[in-house]
Image 1 (cartoon, rainbow, N blue to C red):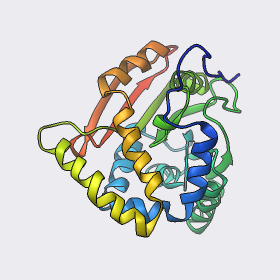
Image 2: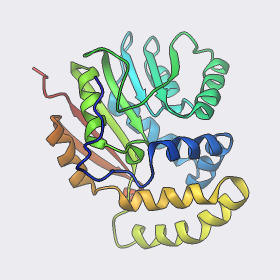
Image 3: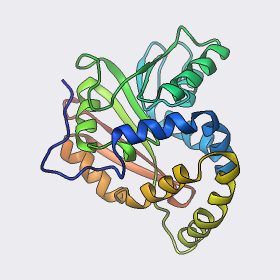
Length: 247
């Protein structure tokens, strides 16, 4: 069963689950094009690295939590033809675009995108060879609860991969990103998408725990062999680990 947030612990995310769903429904039509423009296409590179870390195999079954418009799911079947992916997302607007993208790619049999909540995954224990979530965990109201659910549905030798936007590190990248997020991003999103949504993006990156702290959270929930690596000066970080039941 899914785990609800601990009433005695503050909400992990800056906004509620309902506000998050409404935000992504509102920006769904602009999401892909805005991200490509803002990242200079690096978002596709980040996803490729994360899926490579998942190491999908032919015949494997994978869960993509917060699948959005389906880019990660499509990358999984690209890297491992013959694998299968179930993607879940609370935003119907994002799912509609993702299903259209999957259909255009001719991957309807390999990829299924359905509504879902990472805190209450509608799957039995030990169902998946791997679980991946990209640019999602910082929006979850109870991150420990979500991590426990990911662990529950993983097979004993499975792997969890989390790709997330994080506060940059370093004497050069950190101030450069501040200038970019405060000046360039608002100007671009004013014309291409939703400036408030991308202001939230910057705020949520800053609010997210450090990579070292989030690694500790994964270990507290029970994941083993937890590691992480940063990309593009720490703008994104990829975390990965295995269930505690691994033999």
